[in-house]
Amino acid sequence: MKELKNIQDYNGRIKKVLITKEEIDAKIKEAGKVIDSYYDGRPILLVSVLKGAFVFMADLCRAVTVPCEIGFMCAKSYYTGTVSSGVVNITMDLDQDVSGYNVVIVEDIIDTGRTLKDIYELLKARKPLSIRVITLLDKPSRRLVEFTPDLSLFTIEDLFVIGYGLDCGEFYRNLPYIAEYSED
Ligand code: IMP
Ligand code: MG
Image (cartoon, rainbow, N blue to C red; front, side, top):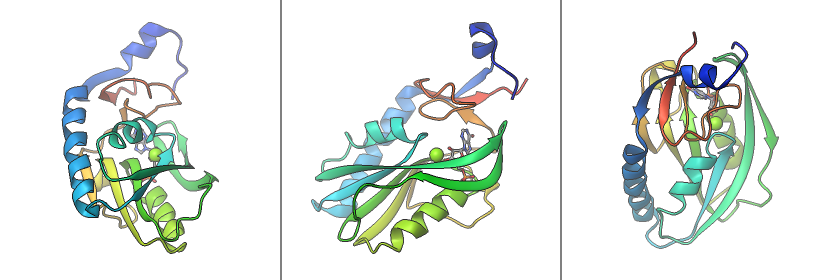
């Protein structure tokens, strides 16, 4: 990735809006109802994978009505520009025991599937009551490790996207929509 020089350069790399804020809001409302229906009034623990999922988590937790706790983990996939190196590190673990919880992992995007597979296996080994995965975005054509989420809000092509929590070089997470990133 080339260095960002100024605001014109920054804006120039936002190629095209793929998913608007309104489209995201509508899908999250529906997702909240689906989660409610899964648990039928039972409490859940939403576990978000930082940093990318923090915006999605903030909106999703306000769309569910079942009693809900929030937990955070941090996983870092190392990137060279927009290409994943395949190395996943859990850099911050949950600060609570998940045994006895209905866990819902909240992820921003599933690309190769490596990050989520690792996190899923790790949490499953801790014997939660149940475990499900919800992702905002899914890029199934990029999968290297088999993984299917329980709920995916949007399926996208093999494009590098930014906004609504997703970054490129740590920028663009605060865009309220999801856009395609321009490499040039
Ligand atoms: P995976 O392990 O390859 O499935 O992807 C792991 C992480 O890579 C995701 O949680 C994101 O943080 C990041 N990632 C994958 N694709 C994109 C993208 O298009 N834009 C921004 N981040 C991405
Ligand atoms: Mg992520």
